[in-house]
Image 1 (cartoon, rainbow, N blue to C red):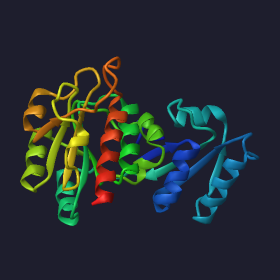
Image 2: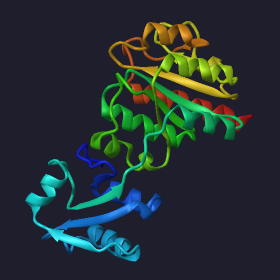
Image 3: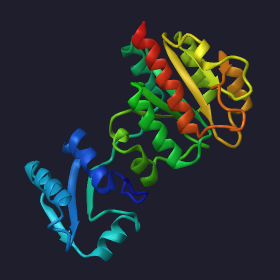
Image 4: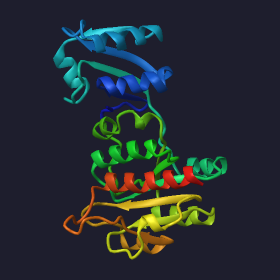
Length: 254
């Protein structure tokens, strides 16, 4: 997981799965590593230490109070690494991505402020072969330690693009032949009745308020997920997963 405490060009990543993810995807970014004293015999820690040594990273052993402070009292599980910071992706990165992709699939999150939902949605998006998750810079969950932990490795693979104006970004996608479908429980159409095989962006809103009015109006159409009437709504990450995997299913068949 990634701490909110960072220098201008460095980030703190902690937790066994988060450290393993960086080792698997971007080991060249690792600058320093610490292991808490007393956990040297933990097999999971030993494996990570071995891999860090293989990449030329010297592991330092530290007291628990140092580790707790370094991770802002996060659940570091006895291991912390410092990595070079990754610049945030923005509209320009989206433009480049669109130029490279023949049949893009995006997940757009509108005013999703819970970092656990952000992380879970990123994990679902990666599982369904989506090409990026798009959020607004404001009124969205920050990519924090909680989001990274919940994403469980997806954070180092799928791009998270933060845009200045979500409405303008939707228009930009539509101008590039990307169909934009908003999820709304009161919609007339079912997600299973729509053609999801072409360039597509699925927009999911916050659980309590759903899509904002302007976002709704910008969408090409709204769709719902049919479900038991006794259940009012799904968690936003679950709803996103249902729709993304339906899109993946249709694309595989076509």
